[in-house]
Image (cartoon, rainbow, N blue to C red; front, side, top):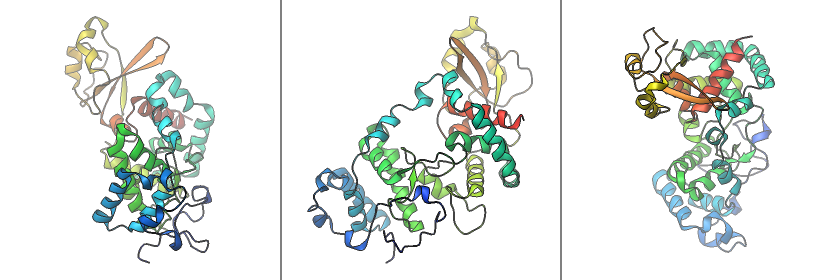
Length: 353
């Protein structure tokens, strides 16, 4: 078979074979289950499945026409799943969106995560040094990202990514286009790696492995850093380290640039700078421009173009920073200023031992 995405007890799974946590109970598919769409309709639970929805059938046709994907395989795959409501609920209640920063940061800056980050740094020091040298990204930033994402690989998600992505692709209107593209990338990823479609386990949003890469980034930026012939973001810490470093470099990390600097603001000129708070996802002004509207007058040294970040650091207390491109590169991982700042704070704690 050209694309051997089969569920057979005798199948040897090359990718991540030594880590069963993300491959438990793969969903699909053996030869007898690869039935035509008409025969699938005769199955008792078909009418409750995704395969019974016109928008899913449209997606299947696209995969067949655009990628020459095995249609009967996709029919069987979508006939075996239905909406995972928890994925929608969690997507609508993300803490980095709804929690003030002083509450959000507590989850990532507890002592256990800091200590585990220091231990991780020591254990994988040689790999981190290698990645820092090759990608220009500080080791503590790489460690902190993995720490925030999965507690250094302890919490990578244990639900099948196929169902999560399908739910968000077809039943989450706010980001339908994005998640359909990630579902497309996921199906290509499993075909490339000869995984059963339901094999990969991850988060409710479809993120994979220690670094929680979305499928498109897994295909494009994940690397076989330990050179064992397999890209494995679940079981290979070197692969996770190298992939995170490469991801940040790819998105423009500037070596040697401190991402944020704490600043003061002139509240008598608030009408001039208020609209620039947390504006956009890239730097917007040079330091003289900020000075002209009452921002960062305490900063004298020359700065590259920056953005103005404001976060609540205590009840009724707001703190301000100027953030350069590196801050926004971290936001490419998660488009939240709370997230980016938590990564930076955790990195500082990890490296301050």
